Image (tube, rainbow, N blue to C red; front, side):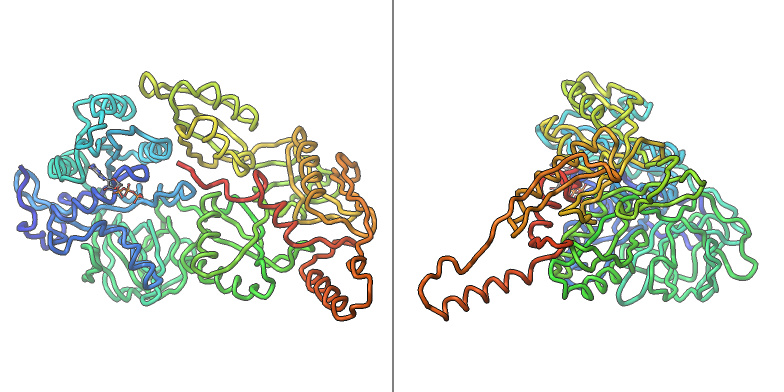
Length: 621
Ligand SMILES: Nc1nc2c(ncn2[C@@H]2O[C@H](COP(=O)(O)OP(=O)(O)OP(=O)(O)O)[C@@H](O)[C@H]2O)c(=O)[nH]1
């Protein structure tokens, strides 16, 4: 039985040899928050009576106060079996597939990780992808099965699966119940035993890696760092190495679990910094912090600027909400360095913004926050990826909006590709392969995790995932498959731009860049959809889909003469006036494309129904 840790005094001068930095990799609902709570309780950081469910995950308070006060790293004292006081730093990883880079930085802040898997479910694709990231970072991995108290738990079966993945013996897989606390003390002992202490040069110029930065309405940006070399002290002037910007350290300290200011952080330690900056883009994840005077000359490796991969046009349903939408985006950007946007106008949808996201889930989260927290009603255009176009004259174009696709002689178009990991029961292999095939996927490898579960690895164009991929995967595998992906680069592809024309005028919101083989299907589908949605006009309206000047599909809305007064024979002038007023009202909501009047609802319906709208990120597991 481990020593009762709350009685263990913390060492006064932190010797890196007693520090253990780790994070927990787990799939949603596998019990990460519950385990973290149990650890806080067991190490005495949170007293039993203060203990409230899910201390780390304080979303309620966040919501109430409208600020983010998540603990990205918590320091816990732990007396190992021999009684030596140790310091355990538990680092939170964002559980969000689009933030692979952020995950990789929080992993890089530690020397080890706990791979936590539900003993009744087994490992999921997202966890597997993060496990690979941990392996790439050379972390020590402690495989742990949780929820062994559940009657449905199959610890033996899944221990074999985890052992196979991690490359250890099934007996080395720990078994815990975060709920009852069984095995959690032993797990902390194993953290001390198996995970190596941090190595750094104590007397070198300071180098600290930023693994998270969070905006707090009261305190400005709180930056979480791991000090790799040297020492950062209170009131010191620091420098961000990627930009050269300097700031004064207003406060430095650790979380246990509340923010606790200290005199400084030494090599191996994990904690937070406050400099008073108001925007997370001034404190970038992956950047290296050093002293302004006599600081380090070489940054720690691995810094990357966040790069938006998926773009979508966001428009307020009610045009007068445009300033509110701009304010809301400004606010969200304070806490989200990856969010980019610029104003855009569309003939069909009015004034809005073209917004860049890290991926589909990021898009989904932002859209939901805009609607829920800021009360905005939005219409989003179909998400598209970023294309690189090389013209025959050698000029290069980056296309984030299909309606800005260059005209002229194109030599090559390149699109982003992702490395996707799928896990499913083996009976669905055929269905998954078929789906990936139709999405231009290339199989990279396949492994049996156990007799009945298989992992498939595919290279897929990102553009093929941003449409209804998740939904298709779920329905083909009855919800059993899980998926994760990371972008890996780009490839040349046979892509064309399809325009939709109403009475000869392009409707910008419907232009799409699609693979040549799918252009015809897209054109036919959009044209027939619009034919149903567009009301008859006083003249015939052709709806065409075209690649350049070549029409590939055509539908027609037949003409009528809409006479609202036709029913009003007799001389009731007031009734006539009423009808004419009503017709005028209706016209206000009409958008005019060339000569054609289209109700805005028709555009919205065409954009958001079935597979052409956003929202495919939902249900991703
Ligand atoms: N029976 C049992 N249930 C558990 C155990 N650990 C967690 N749970 C339950 O599993 C559910 C998910 O646990 P969380 O700790 O919220 O899981 P999480 O991975 O943090 O989930 P997110 O916060 O959504 O990412 C909760 O209902 C917990 O009460 C366990 O050891 N045994």
